[in-house]
Length: 356
Image (cartoon, one colour):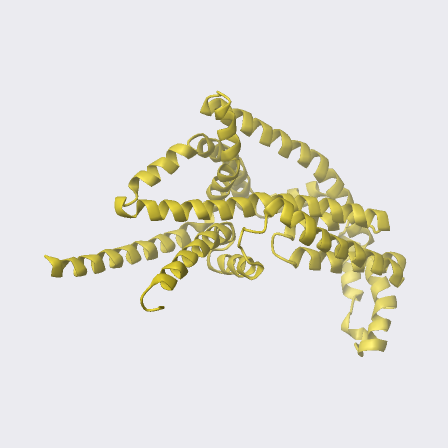
C-alpha cells in the first residue's frame, strides 16, 4: 500500500497538468467572447469590498449591490458626458490643423534634424499625405460621421462590440451580487489537506492584486488630470487629449509618460516653433513622474504591492501576444497569483534540506 501511493500522486499531478493545459486551450479558443465577462469579473472584484461595507451597515446584499451599481453608473455616465465632447472637439481641431502641422514639421523641424543628425529632408515626404488629409478631414472630423461609415462597412463588428458593451453592466451586476457565494463555492471545492496553504496564498494574491488595481487606477486618473492641467498652464494645444492619453496608458510603467512627452513636445514645437515651450512641456511630465514616484504611488498603491515594473510590462505583452485583449485583462491577475506562488516556492526551497 505504501508503494502504490507514489504512483497515485504522480497520476494526480499528471491529471492536474492536463486540466491546466485544457483550460488554457479553452481560454485561447473562447478569447473573442471572454473579454466582456472578464472585464465584468474585474469590476465585480474591485467593487466587492464596497458592497461588503454596505452589508455591514445592515443593508441586504441585493440592496448593497444596487446602491454600488447605481453609483458606478452615475459616475461613469457623468464622466462620459463631460469627457467625450471635450475629446471630440480637440480631435476635430487636430484633424483640421494636421496638414499645416506637417508643413511646419517639414519646414522647421526637419532642417534642424538634418543639420544636427544628418537626416535628409526627403525622409518625410508629406505631399501625398497632405493632399489626402485635405480631401478627407471633413469626413473624419466628427465621431458621428465616422461611426456611420463604420456601420456601413462592418455592421456586424459594430453590432458585436455594442452587444459586448451592453453585456458588461448586466454580468457585472449578477457577479457582484453573488461574488461572496462564488468565492465560498470555490473554497468548498478545494482539497481539504491543502486548504490552509491555498487560502493563505489566495489571501496574499488578493492583497497584491487588489492594492495594485485599485491604487493604479487612482494613479492613472490623477496623472491624467495633472498632465492636462500642466499642459494647459503651459499653453499647449490638445492638453486635455494628450494628458488623458498619457494618464490612461500609465498602467504600463513609463509608457504613458513617454508617449505624453513625445506628443506634448511635438505639439508645442509645431504650435510655437521654439524650444522654450518644448522644455516647458517636458517639465510637466518630469514633474508628473516625480509626483507619481514620491507621492501618488506610495500613497495610493503602497510600497508592499510587489509587482515589479518589468513584471507588469512582460505580463501585459505576453498576455496580449497569447490571447489578445482577453490576455491583457488576464495578465495582471495571473501575474499576481504567479508572484505569490513563486514566493511560496522560494520559502519552501529556503527551508528544504537541499538548500541547507
